[in-house]
Image (cartoon, rainbow, N blue to C red):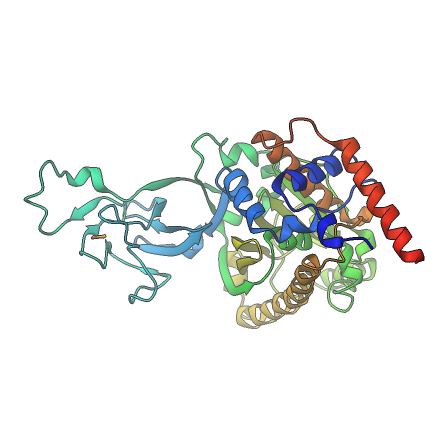
Length: 430
Ligand code: FES
Ligand SMILES: [Fe+2]
């Protein structure tokens, strides 16, 4: 009898070896990630260190904090941070940890909101106060403390950058600029002018899934013919979708509209009407007027450009099997000025809710399957190219952070796999 529990690779080294082996082949020969890569807390801790503490993470869109004093408070892989627009209109990402005795200066449960507009910050523990740039302004009863200089006790500011209106941060001072990493993507999405758009819908989701489960599902269009058979498949059939070549910093897939829909759009245009809700975005290339284009900037910047809006999902992993997700819609000023904007917004929000609900139902069920002793890893269709590209990215992180096994045990893995298959066959014939 095969011991399925024992046959699952669960150590960090074994998971990495499996990822490196699969990523070194091609999509036709590759396997999906080992199940434990989605369920192991040890592996998630390893990913925090080698991915989330090294890479750029997208936290906000500039339109969410338009005025000085506007802030968003959020936890980034366990680190309490806030995104704040200062008096100088600059956006900063700062720690919420008080430099006095480490209290969270904006803790929920102490009457602080997760977002809002303030003139400054006051730590609830001993009432130290900070300005919008993080400088310590007031520290009561500290005048008898020797050599205490307020200048030395500001809030820590993390490295941040704005790219196309999105606020990115990194804990890694050595990382290449996000604008450098996404330089090849920039001309492809610049026509949407996302920096001038506004987030007009935000829906929050606490999900019991692994972050990679989420990004794989977001990126691959194969599942249109399954879970989205009634929602997205009639608009963007899985079979017509395709993926750009591998890029080290992002993956990008094209979801073209069905031909009958393209014909209907053209007929509407000839009558001077526009198809769908929000008005079309002016100046986007012809090919993009009839497709959705989905992106993941590695590791977890989920962004979609469409003919009349953009979608952005803020994904913050919490543990191996938990994420906090905010799904948003962004539109330009023309869309907001349209007399039917409220109607358009309600319709588009409902569409987003409906197809996202299908996605999370399936992702949650997949997460349960990944915990089963019956599943180790699977194979991929050619329509799942982004899933393989994500795997190649993960392999590049394993190599970059020196966590690759000293000798890649390709032969061992193949032998182990053959043994497992042989045992499974024997078991099936008993
Ligand atoms: S810990 Fe913040 S004022 Fe004391
Ligand atoms: Fe989906």
